[in-house]
Amino acid sequence: MKPGAVPEPGAATRPDAVPEPDAAPENATPEPVPPQPLDPAAAIARLGELVLIDVRDEEAFGAGHIEGSGNVPLSRFKERRAELPPREAAVLVAGEDEHQAREAAFALHGHGFARVRWLDAPVASIGSGATHRGPAARLWRPAPFLVEVLSALPRGRAADLAAGSGREAVFLAMNGYEAEAWDSAPEALSRAEALATRHGVRLTTVTCDLEQASPPLPRERYDLVVCFRFLHRPLFPAIDRALASGGHLVYETYRVGQERFGKPRRPAFLLERGELRRAFPTLEVMRYEELESEGGPVTARLWARKGH
Image (tube, rainbow, N blue to C red; front, side):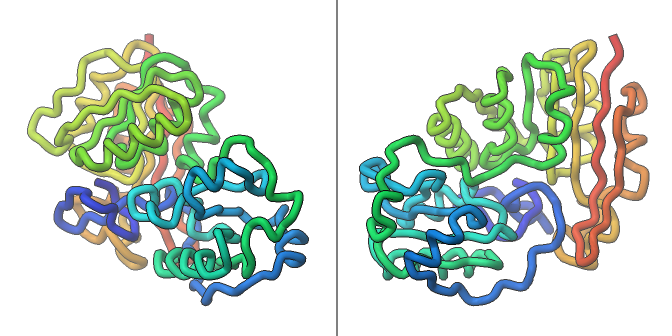
């Protein structure tokens, strides 16, 4: 379970922990404003600038939809929330009719989405634009830091620690890794497996309490270990040992100062300045940054490599 904003259904909890957010730490989400309707003409004019979420069931979506739209049925919002876009995205919600679209738009608003519009007519009102039968667009995104460094990382076996619903792990599997997702919450890992299935990739899940005294990470197994929005300092040596020769580590989480803006607030879950850079003394630091956006979050990120 990771720090974030809104609990995932069935996820485990720990003191001062909050669930994983819609994406890796970025600028603070703007203050949400009430969702507003768009008529079909206005919607067509803005399709290129809005993230389109079709909330009909899979069968209706498959029968015809607007090209470029993602599909998360309204009835499955809770279990598939990890597949929604970041909360700061400008979103247009479309449904069977304006009532379904409006309901979904206000559900997103309730989850902190700042800029939401809904189509005040059925999807079919878009006309020929709603006849696409290709796959749904991917709405979710992995941690931006992982995307930034991906091209320079070695392929092979990868472990995503404290994986939650598996966005980073599935993203790695989609990019050719033999990916494993480790987490203490079986329910979250089930959602990760379902996400992998929907994207046509394989994912190995490992239910494990990473905060136990001796986490059973295998030695010298992984070409890549990633960890986002999670901090348990006794895990650091196990991460180092788990990296194969030449393996890489990509790590990002919150540091002191974050408590001014929200959770986590306890020092146990907040890095000190410079701490992450010093945490893996045997690794070569490829990139290290400490970020502090106005309004939060306050984070540190590390990309490091184990020598041959």
